[in-house]
Amino acid sequence: MVEKLKRLQSGIDGLDALLNGGLVEGASYIVQGRPGSGKTILANQLGFHHVRNGGRVLVATLLAESHDRLFQFLSTLSFFDSSKVGAEIQFVSAFDTLENEGLDEVVKLLRREISRQKATVMIVDGLLNARSKADSPIDTKKFILELQGHAAFAGCTVLFLTSSRLDDGSPEHTMVDGVIEMGEELFGTRSVRRIQLRKTRGSSALTGLHECEITADGLVVYPRLESLYSRPSSSDSANMTRIASGIDSLDDILGGGLYSSSVSLVMGPSGIGKTTLGLKFLAKSTADAPGLHFGFYESPQRLRLKGLSLGIDIEAMEESGALSIVWQPTTEGLLDGLGSRLLSIVKERGIKRLFIDSLSGMTRVSTNQGRITDFYSALMNELRSRGVTVFASWEMRDLFGSEVNSPNSDLSSIVDNLMLMRFFENRSELSRTLSILKVRDSSYDPSRFEVVIRDQDVSLKKALRNEPSVATEPLPGSIS
Image (cartoon, rainbow, N blue to C red):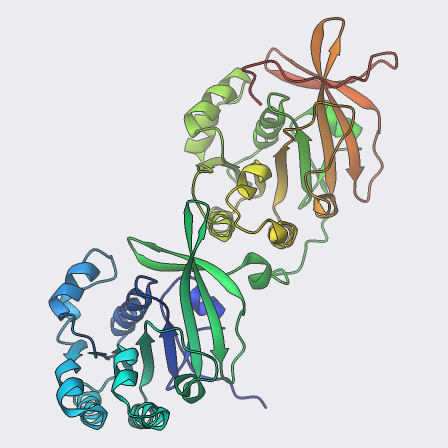
């Protein structure tokens, strides 16, 4: 029988998921990264979470920086609780001891403080200073080994913080049970924080680079969605019932509506009516089966006005709990952060209908276009497993010729239903058309249909065979 390791939860959103439940109790970890990468925030956030759950923490600094200055910065973060300082969480400066008496005396000081404080977590900030005081790599190993030994005897988990990027073969790395590396990268003018588990002895973990950010609540980690949900959290629904798309004529074309827990994608240029189709889909939401508009371009107020023009009282639906609107601009953000936020809202509000407007807007915040297919595959599979029927749009900015190019070479394999909307000029009039390119596990009418939006109603009628097939640009100022 395999014995499970006891875990110490960090209280940091996403980090415990990377660590397969948290730090191993009684183990030792190095947290490394250049100044400003978030090491001190991570450690103190973990420390204050630990004392709130009945633990006791010792924070030992080998740096010249005063604790008052540290408290000044930490006080801007919601996890900081000054009433715990000096009681459940004790801060001790070992800088003078290190400078004047050396590593052996630092070990003795911290051993006494672990015992006196009855610490179950110890944070040692400034491992680089200890390394500089060591006469040889053997002395560095001895320092870490002795601290680990005293801490383990007391049942204490240890975090060593260092601003140096230590190599995998460094004395420090070989002595500890885990290594957490924090960093920051520039993408154009954007700065993106990263976190990576470079070593996790005797424990599974989510490897690779993951995005994170520092908020008013402290550090938030966003595991890569395709690693966190490499398999959906629950079995996919076998329910093959149909639900209304919100457009009767489209339901007829699809053979009775959309399959429950399916994913539909409509592609087309700006102004073609993608958002209109999505709002009609959401109009069928109820308080028992709520809907969510997860958008990137149109603010909630603009959507409410557009809804009224289509005969949909979005504000009333919001008040009844039948519909939620979540809007975020595409100027900033993290792709995995958006995915995490979306799945959290779906879970909290029991969402059954979801309109993502649009996937192209969501994609814009990605710093690695090569993982887009894997990201959307994991996201859609997880939404299916939660019984959510998804309707999404994709902005086709170059769809002004006779050729139709997929926004992503593998994206069509992720969705169940794929629809294409285009503009056509017919006798000096601009019309919209819709073609169904794919419906998984169902027959459908492959004809080209004209989309008619009139008097708050949307309908599809089969286009005449002799109508010209010339795509043209949308009219200036049109909206989707």
